[in-house]
Length: 118
Image (cartoon, rainbow, N blue to C red; front, top):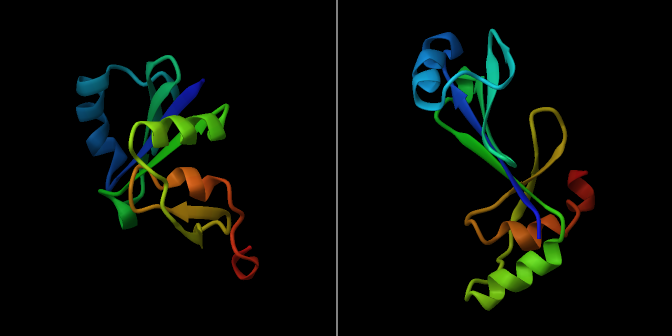
């Protein structure tokens, strides 16, 4: 089963924060420019730091799976069960799922947003 992790960290001032992230993670590996950069920490594991003053301190974590059902089954076998999630829209109008725990994304990822939120 393949799993890819992509975490997005929002900062108030990217130019001020960048030296700290470079000391922590090394030089950015992809797309460095004035307001964002990506660091690849390991195969299939990246951190994206972006300037977003209005939501600084908040983060976004995306996990890509090649077989969601197998991962849900493995998670359930380990004693954790998916729970419900609330669907919203991003600032750009794209569907998004807000999940309260790390295990809730599985059930949410299989559902489409309600018709009134598409």
